[in-house]
Length: 400
Image (cartoon, rainbow, N blue to C red):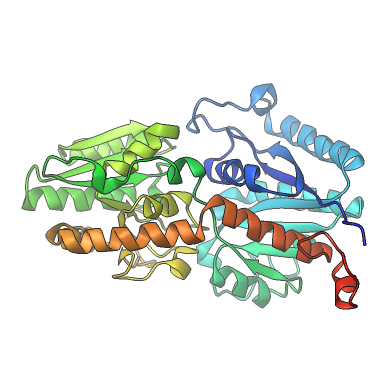
């Protein structure tokens, strides 16, 4: 039996629209064995590197949306195959949720099979009885038309099933790029000066827990002045606020690097002893997986998919957030500082956790392995096995 060609049309954020989704596909694309094309969508942000997304990304949102939808329609007339959407169920990204609902409608109008890969998630909706717009709302009904869903956390899968989604739901992870795995530098090979070096690397905004991290760092400096160093790498809408807070706390031994990529990004991980990530809401952040692959111990929240992969004491220390507290105070700074001091107090503990994280991340989150799992999902949804042969024929005993 002849092999059925597999074509995947991937609708993703453009480089200037969002770091995580774009970087995910940059990491896995070279390892995908199926034929694939990208359609870039989304509004630009100035803090995602130097790529601005071209003239279209600078157009007003309604104009850009129309062009993006027309581009999708044009591509579907020329490219037959499965459509993969990357949706965000985040309360601050409802515009993109509506945009991708229209994309799904267009794909179904052209009778294309559709997978929705859910990225960001409204963690406040976890465990609730209804989809954020209501189980009978138009968006919920549209997203139920998808042939399958991919989620980054077991809780997210449970939510979809609770909300009445009946299509298959696959649990997946994000990825560690080859540039991290092949960086050639591991953190314990860097010569330090006796300070315990902390790293935060992500988009700079309040919901990433950066305010609590700064307050915890202030407590550490009070206990041992000059012993701790904090690097905050990245850019984002609240960078100015974080710099102001650091100034108010009169913090020393702190660096704001701005947006980093490539070798500069790898060097940030390599120069650190521990990675701090206190995000409130997540899918599964690439930065945490990268830090693990670089052999760093973690002081982290368990937001989103992190709950499924992190174990307190094994990967580092988990700090629980108090959702009853207001934004900017979800984590007790004293608790964060205590976890950091525990890592600092035992070099052997920090090294043991780092060794475990490095092996765990490289075995599970390396780009070739993630790409292979994605291909298996594509084939399953299309009713094919990994060779491209129809599953029904294989079950009947036919050879590929």
